[in-house]
Every structure is written in C-alpha cells, then in structure tokens.
Image (tube, rainbow, N blue to C red; front, side, top):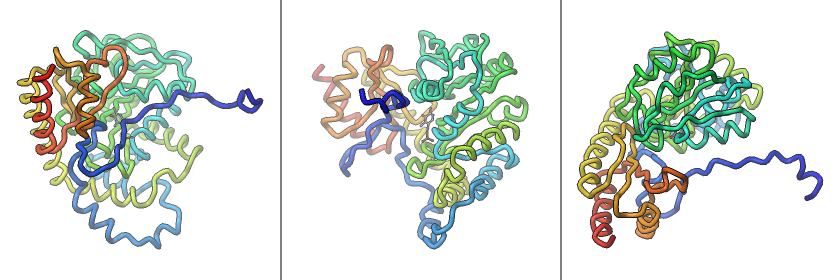
Length: 353
Ligand SMILES: *Cc1c(COP(=O)(O)O)cnc(C)c1O
C-alpha cells in the first residue's frame, strides 16, 4: 500500500439503478415519472437567458422556496431546498444525527440510509420489518439518537397510516424524526401538517418522482424554523451554491401548476391500480403499494431469472440481490402502453416456467 492510501476515507457507495441508453427500451427501474414535467417548465426553459448563468445563483433559492411556501401553505422559514432529496436527507443526517445513541431506520428501506450513516460515522440500528414487510411503530419506542423512515416505505410501497407516524413521534420527543416522503403524492397522506405540532419532525419530499423532474435534482424539507436554520448552517458550511439557477426557476414553475400535477399523479395511480389487477391475474403477489412502483413476487418464476429475461427484451426493472428481497422485482409504473408491453411479455414468459 502506498503511504498516502492510509489516509483515504473508504466507503461502500450507494448503487443507483442503471440508466441504460437507447430509445426502444422500457425503463421501469428507477421510479421515474413516465410523463414530462409541467408545460410551464418547457416554456420557462425556452425563455431562459444564458446571460444569467454568468453570476452565482441565489444561495437561498428564494424563488423556489416561495413557490413551495405558497403551494403548501407554510412560512418560507419552514422550508429548506436541496439538490434532490438525497442532498437534503444527507445534509439532515449530518446536521441532526450527532448522538452516541444509534439512529433507527428499518432493515428494509431506502438503501442510502446506511451509506450516509457509515460515511458520517453515525451509529445506527435497523429494526426488522414484520412478516408482511410492515414497519412496526413500537420498534421505534426504544432509546435512540434519531429516527428516519420513508413513508410509503421503499422498496415495499407500503404506506403507514398517519396515526402510526404520530405514535412514533409521540415516543420520540427528544430526537429529530425524519419522514422521507419521496412517494407521498401517489395516494398517501403527508405528515407535513404534523410539523406544526412536532418541532422535531422534518418531512422531506422530492421533485424526482411525482413532479417528473429527476434530472433537475430538486428536493425539499419542511419543519420548524430552528431545524431549517440548523440545516442551512450546515449547508453554508459546505457549499453555499448547491442549487443551480435553472433548477430554481424550473422547479418553481413545476410547483405552480397544480392542475397538471393532479392529472399525471392520478393517471399513474390509475395505471398502478390496473397493474395490481393484471399482475395479480398473472399470479404475482405484492404488498399493497401507495407509490409509483410495485414490489412483486411470483411463486413459480425466479426473480433473478425473470429480471435477466426482461432485460434481454429491453424491459428494465429493479432487482435487489439481498436477503428477503432477492426473490422480488421492483417495477416502476410506466405509461399504459409500457405496462401493456410488460404484461404481454410476462404472459408468454410464464408459460415457459
Ligand atoms: C428516490 C428516493 C429518494 C431520493 O430522490 P432524489 O432524486 O434524490 O430527490 C429519497 N428517498 C427515497 C425513499 C427514494 O425512493
């Protein structure tokens, strides 16, 4: 080993889903939205003057923060924006999880949590989901240094009713609780109003799924102004200009169009409900998803083999090669046309196994 290698911080990175190139493929592997962003986004993009790129962007992203404040009916002091919710959640780990006691998150959950915990040296403990892949609120009543979980959870798609979220909050008054609502717009009920009642609750959402803007990298958190101030202080201690100007402008445009947002999210929900029927009829089982994906298992078909067969057909889904998940596939809800192509393939495939 060369001497300087001893000083390298070694980490096991998060592995994102593939971003395969090509036009004929059907991409159902990273929970992107199959529809374009709101029309106002395209218009604002056309009208953007590159002259504005000469200067640094507004470090507080105020146009985006104001649009979010208006949309969600909260003061702008209660909103923090970041470069995707990954940036927001990573920053929140760094800001709020500084205890000797372990931070708690489910064993089956967003696989970025253990990566941030390891990167920042945060002790953590991962209570197991129950036999039906559900989070057991009582697992989060023990002493801890903070709590984080997605609601709905990923990759299961299961939504935890708000009374259970509140049970967890009631038992955790002395630590920060982060609820990661990446998929909340597909039928769940947001814990956002609870941020008024619980000063230690941070609700995080993203533009990557329901707002069809994964490529713009926009996420945000809502919480008590003291939480937001603490997050901002950490952000300004690391990089003042995280969010670029186009993301700020285009993100604000996306938030303003509530009608289009309703239209595409309800279309995805309708396609998902049909997918439950169609995949169920083909013999697949899955937890009842409130997200834009289904986590499916088939009695006869090995998930690993089906994943490979789908890939050969240029249909990309997500496979997790880890205990308890390795016989399931996470399938993002695409357009009706994409889903029909998937059902047609599966129908034939299942005749061969
Ligand atoms: C997609 C996702 C995120 C991160 O999304 P960004 O693109 O970084 O906003 C965070 N949490 C969960 C559970 C997700 O599925």
